[in-house]
Amino acid sequence: MTNANDLFAATPVTRFPIAGSDQTFPVRRVYCIGRNYAAHAIEMGFDPEKEPPFFFQKNPDNITFGDFPYPVQSDDVHFEIELVVALHKGGTDIAVADALDHVFGYAVGLDMTRRDLQGEAKTLGRPWEIGKSFEKSAPCGPLVPASQIGHPDHGAIWLKVNDEIKQEGDLNQMIWKVPEMIATLSRYFTLAPGDVIMTGTPAGVGPITRGDVMAGHVAGVGDLTVKVV
Image 1 (tube, one colour):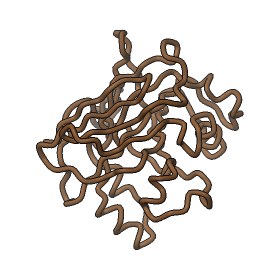
Image 2: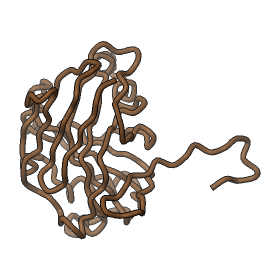
Image 3: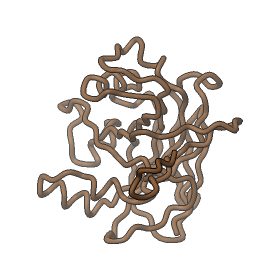
């Protein structure tokens, strides 16, 4: 909404399309959990048995619904296929048993990462935003309401690049399940309608180049095809 007293026009709100509906889902915040599949934690050089859950954020306008433009200032950009969770209720100190009541629906998404810049930040003990929160770094498909598909907690999650399988896992391999993620986040942040959670990626992450076509799938949710331009 435009305010006559604003110095300039506000940036438009990012909105997910909702499958089978003319309604849209306005995005408030985007939380991402790190190293939530054991095999991916290991391939990144970490021991998943010793690590409590941790989160970082992308910006709402990082979410996009079309091609992925190869970003500037990086020569090593990686794909990470993920289940995306969208909340229509918020709160603090949400109980694990109540957490799924806060979920509106699910989508297929990609947490694109400037791995070289993320690696430099890790080495220097700095935040990851430079590697994670860049323009159009979260290509996503439409939201599918939980009222239609339930709450997927098992089934295949995979990504192909140019028809070659790169990542392959199962939702039941998530170390921290969706209710646990919601409950944990709500102890540190006040969650609200419009919040989105990207739930981590299975092993097999790797680089892309311009012209590649990424095709992802999450069982029970759907498919996502994104071209690198």
